[in-house]
Length: 211
Ligand SMILES: C[S@@+](CC[C@H](N)C(=O)[O-])C[C@H]1O[C@@H](n2cnc3c(N)ncnc32)[C@H](O)[C@@H]1O
Image (tube, rainbow, N blue to C red; front, side, top):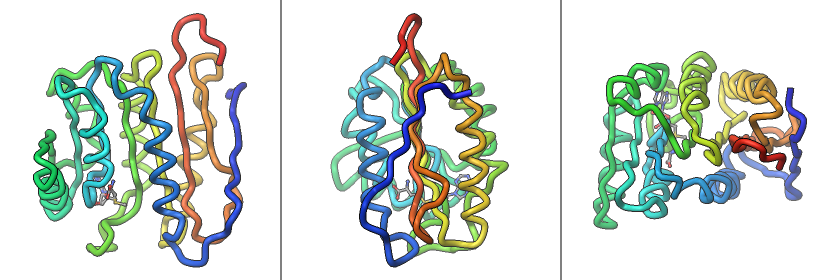
């Protein structure tokens, strides 16, 4: 189990379902940032409105691929448009992230430097199209298998929509199962204020690294 897990509790409670979103997104970006120049592709598992993909593309060296997937064309269009507005492009793939393993195999991507997933539904979109525990955990398995030493992954999970608390609990259980000697993890406590998004971060340690 995880021998080096740190818990972080943020101070101000939120009053609406997604009011902690910008803060947790910024936290996810800060967590991932050190892993963006490791020489391996990076992946956004839920492109959505493209904010995370834009962050990855802006902060990752131009010679490294940035892939982003989403099951909804609307999300990919919004992401492409956001990137275009900044004169940037990424590899945008319409896919269920449950298929991440197959997708990365087909594309011959054996290693990843970083990956993030901002779970839930597309803001302003169809709330019935929402991430689920089975798909999310399958995607995380595929990412964890590929993260290079020093590689990082981050998940923001929402608890204010139907199925959200269950998905957050499933992510927590998966996170807690990461082997302690190979991973350093940082995650929020299990009892957030109602509706508060939860952050999960993991760093794959290099050989001989303790911290
Ligand atoms: C909260 S949004 C992502 C936010 C996004 N990262 C951003 O920067 O705006 C969640 C996204 O997950 C997508 N999604 C839901 N289920 C999915 C699945 N099984 N596979 C891939 N994407 C999925 C939704 O279409 C939605 O766009």
